[in-house]
Length: 420
Image (cartoon, rainbow, N blue to C red; front, side, top):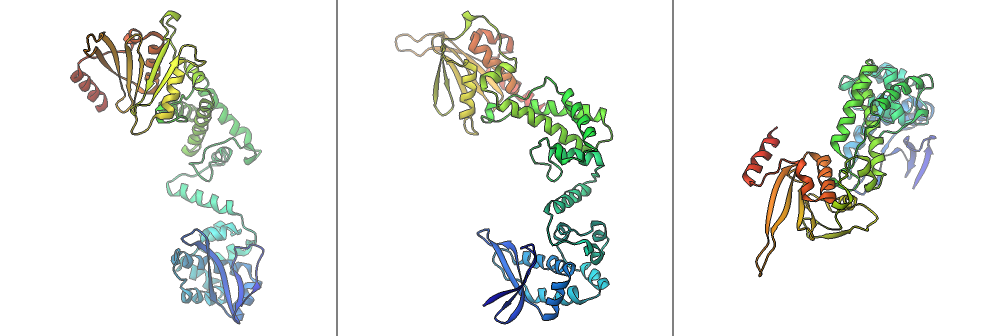
């Protein structure tokens, strides 16, 4: 039979129970193989219970010292109860100086004490009993997370000033640099908010008019890495010039915010509108426009586009690529059967082939095709080529060369490019 003898406001702080007439500390820590919390117990005496009841600081210190033993137990091991019991007298009954000395020799959970209000400066100087005078029963997990974030920064030599910290709070990246940034003005000290907004304004002005296009080769929501890097470089250079006092963490979080917002704007724009916004469609006159096109991928899937479609051929093609592109599906073709020409895009090699029918097949013979190759400079280059072809055919691709009909010559050019 188990009865709860003593518990505190926070359900996570260890309770004291009486089980079959024996006093025990009971705490939840870690998880089992099914990710359910594990519960551990170990025996205590009446003198220990009296201290736990009256002294929150000692109670929390005991918890902090026992947690590493629970971690050692893992998902299915047993708690080393002898080691836990051996901590009782030195933590609950010893003089403060002896408690501080003990914690210099054992493992303990620092973040747990910080979450419950420990004075961080005293804690780091090894004065645990003094640090715990400010302890509270309620937990502030964010305080412990911020402490851990500051420690990680300190380990790599980054020390934040007040404005640096305010900028990271504004973007929501104070705790985790990998978090998608947002604009959180309420998270910033009102006295520092005007300075933060001046930094943000510098970034916005530096990238005004820039955009981050989509890269359907990597999926429907993927964005152009080159556009991202270009905007990142522009913003960081401008912010560093205008605000040289900022540390790298603050500068990077501002550029991350600008790039993330630009990428989101691109993702929320329909593919056809995205193409128009890129300014990549050539005006070759209505007479050159295609009437029927066939799109195919490397898996044999085909999609037709007709001139009376509500969307442009380029928009439909890139939508097709976004839906179908994968690591094992990186060759896409656009064919105009009526004109006997087409292009084949090789995403794995950043290259393209334009194919024209030189002689139609007669009397059962195979048609004769002319194939020319060219290197492509990223997704922007592909967009230009696709737009040119769907509006003007293979002839419209001539300015986008050089085009090479000799395969060996093309392979040498590709190797030279890749070597650079």
